[in-house]
Length: 324
Ligand SMILES: C[S@@+](CC[C@H](N)C(=O)[O-])C[C@H]1O[C@@H](n2cnc3c(N)ncnc32)[C@H](O)[C@@H]1O
Image (cartoon, rainbow, N blue to C red; front, side, top):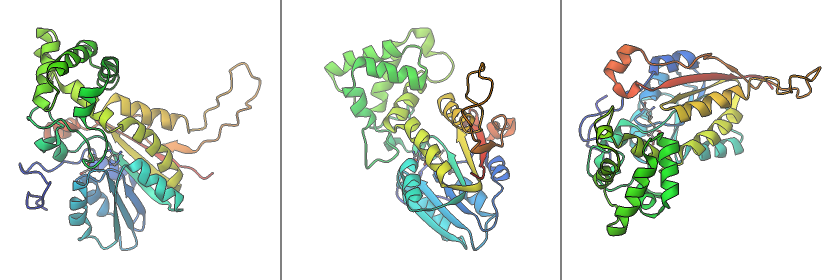
């Protein structure tokens, strides 16, 4: 299917999103023809189309995305499917909670975290340090705080914390200080204004090191603007509650902060005894809720990375819910 710009909000440069680790995701989820499936991060539906090939008329497919543009891709996807389809616009943490409260059960739930190529490649969304655009970065442009508000209003120490924690930015304090000095003279409005401030704040050799000098700060701001890590933590809890026994949960993450949350979430639910080692017998009665299917996270092949450099840092983890 050729996706083009004839629908407002879709990419104008022909850059459709290439789904990452798609074959691995489908193999490990092993969809059955009549499964009920939730794709928590529908995007352009790349993973959804692969999963849909395994489904029959009795399947139910729910796509969730907080970006309203994803609904347009969902409509293109769903019109070709023989099974029931529904789109939920919103944060997957909220959507899963609502489904849970309504007694819904799913066989397979998957999350492909972060931003899509369409979001990065639409200059007006303000996600990219490569285009000049209003500093926005909201995945849902209809709600929440923008990157412009954060950069202009947060205290120096909070900006430095965000750059350090979510971007692992070595010059976090220098960049935050520079931003605070510059905004006194003129508020930040655009992405390239911020890029210039970052470049001016770091030592000259660091401007020419590996990767773009603004990459880490942009990642950090995007995570903060969209409160991505809190959504992931809440989303995982709600996803596990929604799964029927034997159901599977898969997560593709793109940086160590996300992967650590998934890894720790799985590790806390495999039933490992938490008693102090000097107790003669177990008193915590730890019960396993899941079985981890990927003992080590699955990474993309070299061929996939060569075809799609955005796959480089991806990691896939999958777990199966056990009978309670
Ligand atoms: C990497 S893309 C997914 C691409 C998709 N799997 C595909 O193959 O086309 C991530 C998508 O998840 C959405 N997203 C990220 N965090 C979200 C959240 N907490 N709730 C809902 N959608 C989210 C983004 O808006 C984006 O469209």
